[in-house]
Length: 181
Image (cartoon, rainbow, N blue to C red):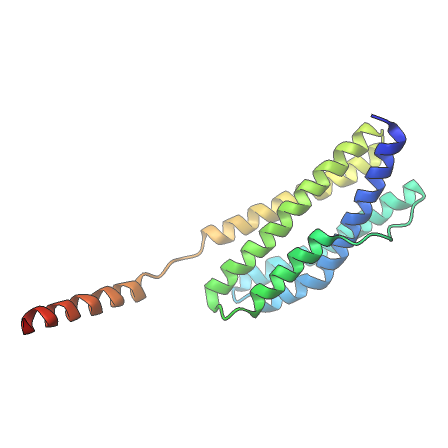
């Protein structure tokens, strides 16, 4: 693999991630506001602060490379943010809204985990040790956030009372029909 071509790809991908993280800085407060669970809201607020740190780390990497962190839009994150906004526009309430927000947030985390995994590997191949360490730290934080979202999803409860009421209504309707026959 040609070193200069890999470095060009590495910088291009860093720009993509930089744009993605900046889009998240704008989107996370909206997710926090839409969350009904205090725990989920706090999680989004904490991830916002963490994401600001990711932007700072990326800026540090660009400075070390002598590159500007601008010039690239991340269409994937644009789509994920748009999908999250559409979720917030749905008529979901309570834990259903939170479940939908968790799903949207995990899609974002999985995208970031993939992106940071690639650039961390490329930093290693290019001998960019300090950048690799910064990218590894961010990658681990993204994995931790994904795990926290999974824990929140697993802690949700499903209320069967509405289904039980529907079953009772159907049984009493069937009995009433049987009695008339």
